[in-house]
Length: 570
Ligand code: MSP
Image (cartoon, rainbow, N blue to C red; front, top):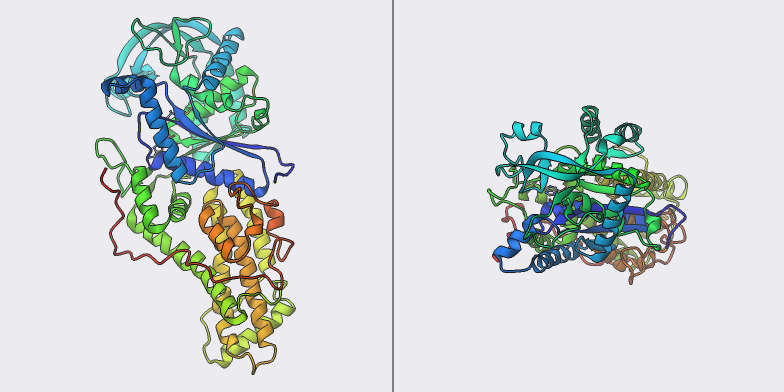
């Protein structure tokens, strides 16, 4: 199902194959996954890309140390990323490896076009080479870090060579205007200001090639006009975003690309890549979103501390608390804004209990159990949900029953208008997705759930149930209340589904809502756009006679005293 919205294209960085997949890689890819699933739910034709960056020099040296060819080593690790991402239930539409011909041949063609247009030219280069990061640093940056790599602390190497340069300087005014005006939206705002500040210090041409030395392995993309040079890996890697969709059937996705990454590599994505695209006559990205970092139990993750939260740790958490709860925690508590976020077990358990066990899971099971107990699993009637007329009467009766039972509940008098609440939630969710503000998008679903909880506490349907037989209309009132709870939760479950696709699918099975989503195509098989699916009592909503069963417990309460799950020793 697709609508007439323009196609949506979202990408993650392509990850170095020398690293094992860890929380950082999984996080950015999860953000892209949730955004992609959210956009598919809105009815858009989505293309979500991730992959691996394989032409780094380090791949060659590590492979050699291990007695492997660079390709064997790259393949082993690309497979690790693929299996980690499959485990995380990511719905990427493709996985690009830069060693694939489809990438290499097109990247090479773009470079040729840039040479032809005069945007890439030959010149002398003298600079500080950070071999551990595969990049040149300027004199200022090198000096600032005592001629050591700012990332790994390894000594920098002075290199003078004839190089090809990309004339980034030619695009300075254009870039400034694009970023300032949000034509290229650099998010969050703090990153935009940083980038503009740096552009204002003036842009210089950037080296885009290295001379091939005798004995160098055949690894990477050769300059198409000059076989003595190899294209610098960063420049070639950036091209992946376009190479993957540069085919007749996928070209439509190059419409308003959304690039995600962490703040470490925002310069490449917000400045160099858009300028390259401009020189190529291609559309620049619409959004460049650079989030902050995960840290682990209060400490920066580093190789020397050996405290990376690896995929195996996430697997251990998923075994214990479910994969969807890991996805929920990472999505809602992650460093999407400008500040770093801490992955700490105690925090995980707090959020799990508060949002999932005690809210989403508890609400669904309360409502499912009541429908099962009082109406044998069938919703007998609908309700306009506003508690204006029918519902108003139902609520009055409920309150009467509650008061008669002599158990006033400590919830201040309030009005409940579920259709307005859910319509607003859908609108806010949609708006938040546009700026990849996933925490806000998810909170809209949670807001509905929490209102249902309040409503149950307020109207005390279990008390009303005891009055069936002696209070007139009590049964009708109870049915009306439970319908409203179920319908509100059904709409909430749609909004929560991008983060928790499995758990919401389990709820839809129990509540016979599988018609919302084609079970053979769980990633994009919604039968209608969200606006239609979420219509209160609409064609996809609950009707009188809909069957709602108790279903499984979605999230068991977690005991904060239990130790943190640990990855099994390898
Ligand atoms: N290969 C380049 C990217 C080329 S894109 C054309 C690269 N690869 S990387 O393997 O180092 O991945 C960096 C990215 O991994 C970050 O931008 C971010 O998306 C993710 N993360 C790595 N560590 C992270 C954290 N500690 N926290 C959050 N995300 C982090 O750079």
